[in-house]
Image (cartoon, rainbow, N blue to C red; front, side, top):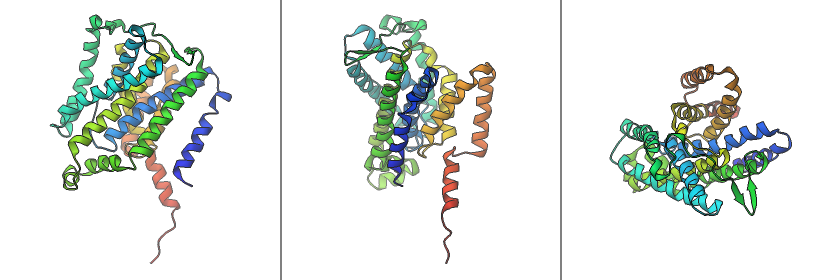
Length: 317
């Protein structure tokens, strides 16, 4: 079966979720859709281009804050505000990507993680610029589309809206970008920058491009999160969020579709189920990371690859 048609069929099945799920289930799935966009964007940078970028939640927070500030201070139609947010965050991705052109390996990781650590302080000190300081931004206006207001309490419209955005983002990354020239250039840079240059690949251009694409998609996810929750605070940059998103990528598998998306669903649902155990939740998640790294270094998609290899007929000479 053509892989693309399989995923289209799965998407159609997911679209039937509201007919069998209650509000809480829809809420969890909405979060799954939002986080799958974040992790897919991160997978594009780390898994397929090989850039160890730890600033992914910076893009998410930038999208959330930009969307909230536009909604509170400017009279911009909601969908236009989301696309404006994507452009703003893509520019931020460009600014972060530029210094990374002069760095390699662990130094890129250190620089991007330093940006992640510095941003909460900037937000807390940014009350004069409209960030809300330590308390964040409260009472973000709900989305209005076509005269219809999407309130957080009404999960059904949010379910289909986030599903649509997630499907478009994932399809764009895995079925439009990666199989074509840009995607081949990204993978070539990951495998060997020197070899990529010998083939005429401008690694500087493509590195900046992947930062901007990933930032834009993640920024849109942040914008949807802020408008759905109605509140955005510096807490979205806390270590817990960072570790959970990293866990999504590790458990699913980097650079192996649908690893990132699968990891986003598994960890989001698992995290919600573990809320009843309180402080032991992070312990369970930490143990999950250890098990994943030790026994499934390529994530759950490694199991799928092994099962497919086992089903293939043996080649006889």
